[in-house]
Length: 217
Image (cartoon, rainbow, N blue to C red; front, side, top):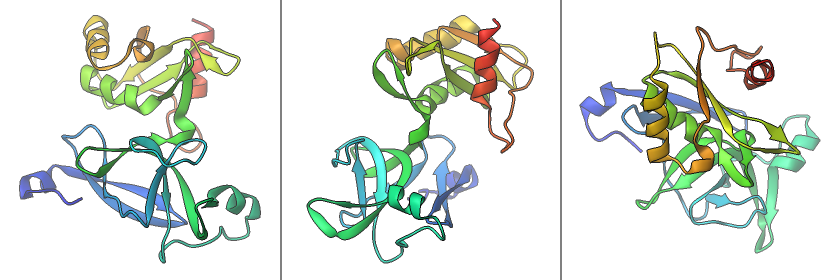
């Protein structure tokens, strides 16, 4: 979906996502909460739940069509997991992107994050990036991380948050903003300020290291 004005274009930034090894560059507006992927084509795009049933709102993005390959190079196991066929049309091969998207009322798809960042909190499926969007706006910080904590038998009892990149935080203000925008089970129990967020070997924020910090808290 293209920005509507030159001003929006000048204040937008690009994001990259990988589809079958090909990096596509999309543009989303910095003033919006979620990157806009654009409108879906009924025959080329599906949004499905964890049972691969098509859903009308939030789910995993699946793609098909002439521009989608049918396998990973020299990786049969990953090909088996990511390329699937749906019962109602066994002829079409679909690629499971692993991206969590939400379909808006205007027909556009909004990128929410990765399926592997979904966790269970008090029995609810939660996308951590949805919490981080609210945290980022409330704290005015770019570096924010939501960590499910504590986790027992695969389900978290709550969420803790870490913020960096700002000189100070107003924890009460941030939590109040979170309560206004999120259901109770997604509101962080506490906000921690760090000089730097630890990164993993891939340069991404390391949730495991942050969880270890919570163990010693």
